[in-house]
Length: 160
Image 1: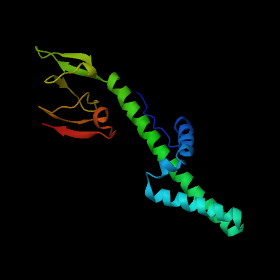
Image 2 (image 1 turned 180 degrees about the vertical axis):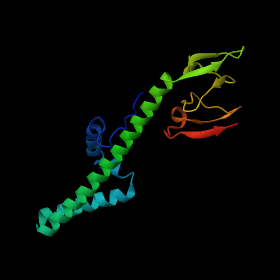
Image 3 (image 1 turned 90 degrees about the vertical axis):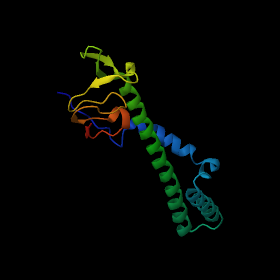
Image 4 (image 1 turned 30 degrees about the horizontal axis):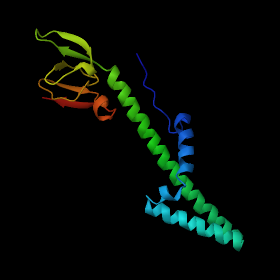
C-alpha cells in the first residue's frame, strides 16, 4: 500500500524562488501590470519620500505598512505561480508514467504506457484507476481518478 503525501504550502523548494521573484516584482514595469498594487506601490514611494523629508513615527509606520503590503502581495503572487508550475510539472511527469490496459483486436488487455495511446484505442479501466487519457466511457460505470487529465485529484464517477 502506498501513502499519498501532500506538499505543504511552506515547501522550501517553492518559497526560495518565490522570495527572489517577489523582489524582482518590485520593478515599476512589473507593478504597472496590476493597477491596484501599482497605486499601493506609488503610495509607498511617496510616503517613503515624505518620511525622509519630514520624519515622524506616523509617516514611518505608514511607509512600512505600505511596503509590507506590496512585498507580501508580490510574494503571494509568486508563491501561487510557483505552486502552479510545480503542479503542472507533476502532471507532466505523471503523464509519462501512467500505464493503461489497452484492449487489442482480439479483446485481450495489454499493459502499455499512456503516451502510446492513439485515437480510437479502447482502454479497460477499473474502479480507482488513474484514467490514462482523454476519452469517452463506452461501457460500465466506475469511480476513477482523472488527475492525469484534469489535475483534480478527487475521484469522480463516470458512466457510459
